[in-house]
Image 1 (tube, one colour):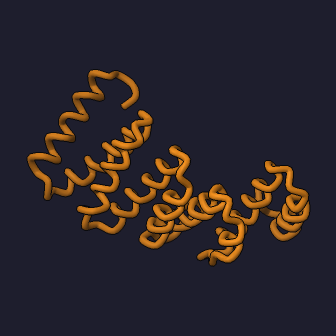
Image 2 (cartoon, one colour):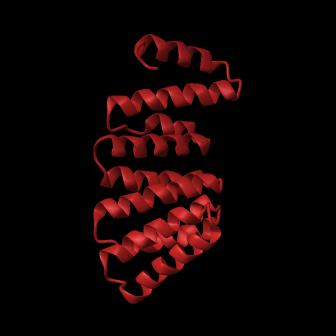
Length: 166
């Protein structure tokens, strides 16, 4: 709730009232998503997790559930829990389509990399060639950051295989 704290608190109270008075309403579910986002912005991760998990439990719209899972993944990365992030992003990827699904799959792969489980990362199947390419680059960059000599070969192979990549 960045910006004017008075306006932010007023909006938060109105969203909370909407959730309490009309819990079955579509707007109440969207208010719960927005509440989770605001808590993430304010680095109130336990409150964000509670709102987003709650939404995941009550949302009927699969896309809304997927959006909650995606934001839960972001919050899990922010709290250094890459395994929870991977699970949340994988859940979002399974429910989404197109570029949104690819973004969630890439984030799930990055979370797997951050967990340090390179063997599991290498064995994971990726849904599209774009995701495969992005995760190959991420792995090479991670190994380079760790000063692993294998990074040079990985990044060289990536550049040769994907000369069009920005």
